[in-house]
Image (cartoon, rainbow, N blue to C red; front, side, top):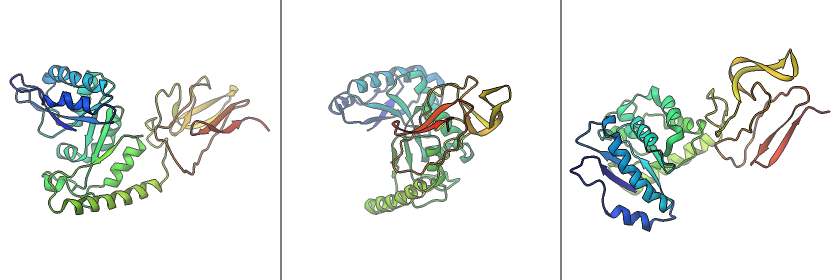
Length: 299
């Protein structure tokens, strides 16, 4: 549900019907989607944070009683105009049911494509929603920034693939605001493009250590480290040693730490796993958290 919030004292904070709507939506897995404006505070200005936190917490507490979540919607030109603004405020609100949105068209309006992956990675712990659409790289007006999913020069496949590699598991919505023509035809074109993108991504290998960190894995990761190479410790045959780099996960200096769990949950898969263990080691790889392939130093 798309809801407007005003920070200015002479404006109504939000529509009064919102309170009743939240009650009626109890148990319906709905997200209250907040776009936030102000004339008193300039776009992106932290001066409005205190007022914003106060209002968002008020809405979040109502939403919590109905089991709903709240996501801030970055809208270019509004007070929350960038993903960075949304995440900054979400951190200060500090409510488990409050998160941020990565809105592709509004991000393209205010940022450069080279910043996509680092921004996604930074925002990932706070992302509740992502919206996508076809768009032109370098476009600055809405005609070029919001198109059906099968159009535009922006590499939406790379965008979705990056989301997956970073472990995003939330909903992905389709942005269609202001697209001309027949709505049914636009939706049909976008859904056909989505199915092709999904099939293409689903057919590819997912490198769970490719990002050089533990973005694809759930917290906590304990003493696990990402390194470049692992070998037997020459001073202790029951320990491993390693060299700096990326591509290999090793379970820390003690040789014992917590389990690693992927963020994504998989159905039918083909898994390629390479491992080594020191003398006397007992380890394993589990599927669905249940079925173990034993990795044991034993004949």
